[in-house]
Length: 171
Image (cartoon, rainbow, N blue to C red; front, side, top):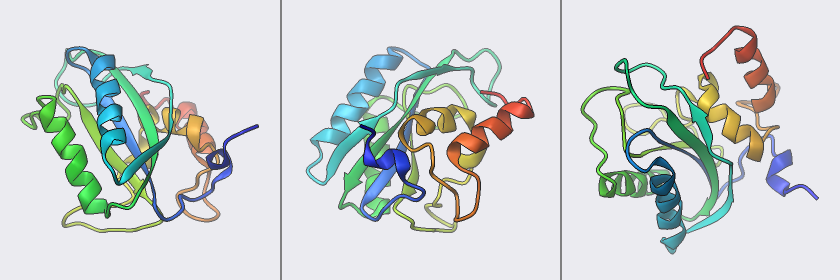
C-alpha cells in the first residue's frame, strides 16, 4: 500500500518538505545526522525520507565534489521562519560556511515547501524559488510526492522531471 503523501497534489498545512545536500566530508553521515537532529526537535516529526541521490554540482566553482541529495517530509508546528532557523542551526553545527555562492558545503538544508504557504522576498521565499528547476531536488521529491503540483493544473513533479530531461537539464 502506498503512503498517503504519494497521492498529494499539494502539501497540507502543518507539513514541510526539506531538501538535503552535501559534497564535503562524510556526506552520508552528515545527511543522516541532519535528519536525526530534525527528529529530535519536539515540534518536528519525520514522516518520510527519499533515498540519497548522487549528483554533479550545478553552478559554483569548477572542481567541486559530487553531491549526495535527498528530500524529507516532516510534520511540524514550527512556523516557516522557525523551521528555517532550525535548518540554519543544523547547517552551522556541521561547519557550513556561506562564502562562495553554490560552493562546496558540508551540509545544505533548503525549505522547499511549508504547507501551501506563499512568501515573497525580502526574507524567506516559499515555495523555494528554484524548486521546479532543480532535477537534483525533483528526483528525490518524486519518490515521496510524485503527484505534487506547483499550482492546480500545473505539471506534477514527475512530469516536470521528464520535461527537464527532454531539454538536457543537468541532474
